[in-house]
Image 1 (spheres, rainbow over the protein chains, first blue to last red):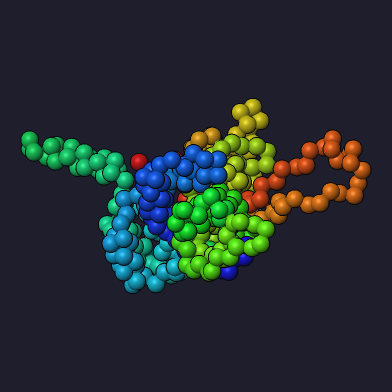
Image 2: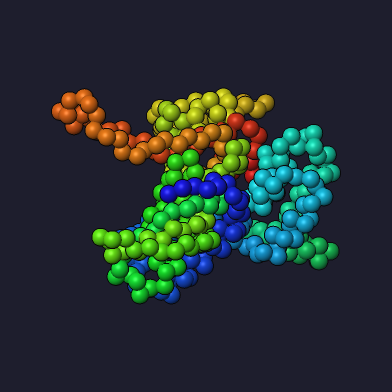
Length: 148
Length: 204
């Protein structure tokens, strides 16, 4: 076996999630040979990887969201690796941005970091329970204002 | 975290599978060979991405099976240097904190890369971060099962292919079992603000 190019492309977690979900559907349809001993490794790795990726923000993304996110990031001048990390992790605090963007203190001002955080949180969908929590908090606030 | 790797290999299809579509047989054989296996200096192979080129299939004298040279792309787990990952603490030992990603378990955070100052609690076998504030020192425990954010600082590949019989006497080597080394290990670090247990850095 020969490796022609060990680094031909970087894949986002969303792309791998999509691929593994499609593979799972395909194998469910074809049915019988899933349990033959040869396929055990593939079953194990796809199950575990899918389980891991499903707990990350990627499971709510779509190709349109990814495209919109990358276009919005063009103005911030980030490297490919930094954009990929932002896409995979969906940081919500400035500390996380500083971890993923190299030398962020020198390259980005505070307003730029705020703008970046805003782009990330507005374009990339969050976990639904986090959004529900936020909604119930804002509902409680509105109820408190009404009687007055 | 994942990369696409272009590879070339010759796939052997036995005669009793000739009724299946060639692409399906080849995909199955490649997955059987590579899925969940570490390729030296490449990474942990996950699954086949696509087949880019199929060359002519040959049948050689003496073997009824067909041999096809295939160019394909495979999805491989290979985080780049300084990438941030989130995993679960598998356990602690004097060597450091062991982290797992569910599908990959050989990640170690050595004591020097923990948030300093850190000490190892022998009684509970956990590493503790002694976090100092004006009120005093808080002991933050790194318990098993907690989610942890870390940075990849190093990786090492070990060639675990079998070596021939050693020249030393056979009786001695048969008593000691050969040490099982992980073919691919990652070294992480959490010594920066924002890294470590997720619960340490969430504001609410």
